[in-house]
Length: 118
Image 1: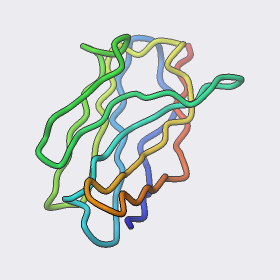
Image 2 (image 1 turned 90 degrees about the vertical axis):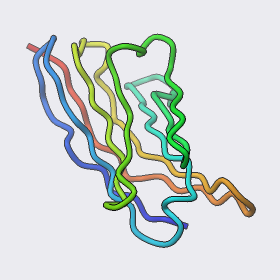
Image 3 (image 1 turned 45 degrees about the vertical axis):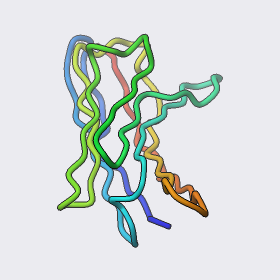
Image 4 (image 1 turned 30 degrees about the vertical axis):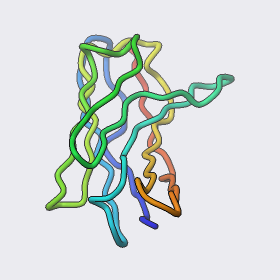
């Protein structure tokens, strides 16, 4: 099971960009599907994007074209590049890991706040 620490959140103006990072420690990072989720006030946590160990990516339909997920296995880090940010992107962003083989262990980071406001 990996331990996850997010960074890179903050306040940004509409139309701006941010890059979130998630540093993983522990074993078998390269065997995990990594993902980003977000939770806005009063709403359920929702998928943003995932990236499998082989590099296959998946995005929430509404975010395709603006957000890009990537991973650097040498650094045990996954990134989320967010462009053309909108006020509705304001949320706490969480990093997630799930092992791709049994026992399919899951881990969550503590979250990082992203606020899009002028």
